Image (cartoon, rainbow, N blue to C red; front, side, top):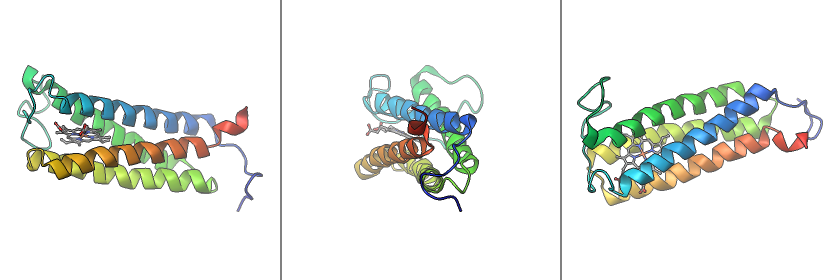
Length: 153
Ligand code: HEM
């Protein structure tokens, strides 16, 4: 196994993927906080079904548009976080560990999203959903950082 400091650099597409991961997590969080501000939904939950809203794959109705967008962006985010965990090679030990932890956290976050809906915004579930989102961002950032971007400069 390669020694710390003597590792070959990760390929650029892996670093870009790790960056897209944190960009998507950030965007999902932004939409989530926008949702919880209740600016569109007047607080409360408009789409009480799972996993899709009543429109299925069709055009969403206005009153649950942002909830629908949050779910779609979250699904894409989870896919990219998983892809990052797979793409980071084993020899990049710290980056791999952080990316795999991020993948585990995103799975928990999707389940918490489901519970957020099923419990119609139980405060404890919403609070856990928010803090898990922040933890997910932290591990995504670590994976990106440890992917070796700083060594380039
Ligand atoms: C990558 C995955 C996800 C991330 C990072 C994420 C992040 C967030 C964040 C940061 C909030 C704001 C919480 C607050 O301000 O208290 C939020 C709200 C919310 N999320 Fe997610 N979320 C994800 C997936 C999901 C999924 C799959 C669902 C399932 C429907 C979901 C349902 C909700 C709902 C309903 C709210 C609004 C809560 C409220 O009105 O207070 N989330 N999300």
